Image (cartoon, rainbow, N blue to C red; front, side, top):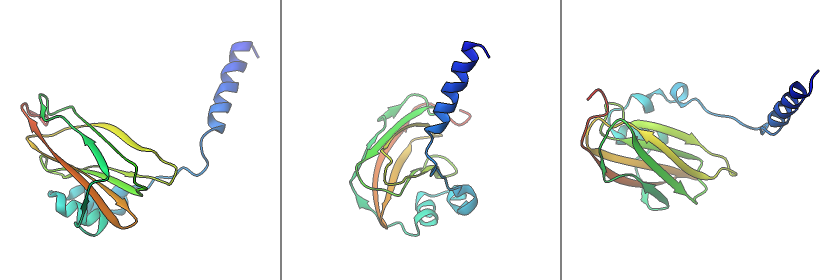
Length: 149
């Protein structure tokens, strides 16, 4: 075995050994299909969390006031809350749910994603903290359509 192969194999084994053994993810598309087919944010929230009652605050949301291109709108959010689940919703497309993140106690909740919005609408981020839903909403004005426009 030559030196390059040995080093490459050693680095690969080291990287694999650092992956936590307790990684898991829930497939919400299979376990909660109504979350993904809901056309209204309230319906998607009810399907995901069982309620639409929220408390404002606890989440920092950054999104542009005006998006020049609805196909790539940068959305960022973070929280210091010990959230178990964080979901992103919007009301500008036919399906309201954008993404759902499952967290454990060791996860840093600081995300940056890009979403598509067909028209001007509101982006809502909801964090489930021991059954209490914390939410923040921001309106994004879209000047050029992102879904086929």
